[in-house]
Length: 158
Image (tube, rainbow, N blue to C red):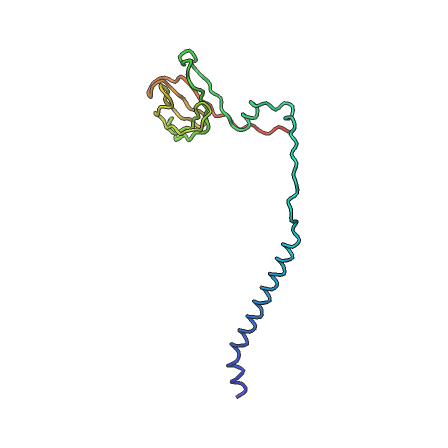
């Protein structure tokens, strides 16, 4: 009979051991986090920022080139109207054979996507998209009048 009671009592003992183990883990966790949070500083230290002059030799143009700002190269400046907006090339997605899309910003505004054949602004169309440049013209099938070039990122100088 004694053997039968020990076997029948085994699940109850197992449940007690698991309960005691989980209780010990919970208490240990509370002690750990209580000590951890209690040792944190109550206030954030004051940070002071001092304005200094920019390093010598740092120009806005050089910084722009380092960040990938592009230049506009007019291949035929005589045919370009004087009131034309300034254009900047922010990125390209060339699909081959002059097809693709270009991210072009007009007058420094947010860049917009233009596909081959789309009008960028009045009288200026995307003619061809190459891996690092976009050719623009006065009509969708016309001659190239402007070329936007994506500059390679500048290497850091030591």
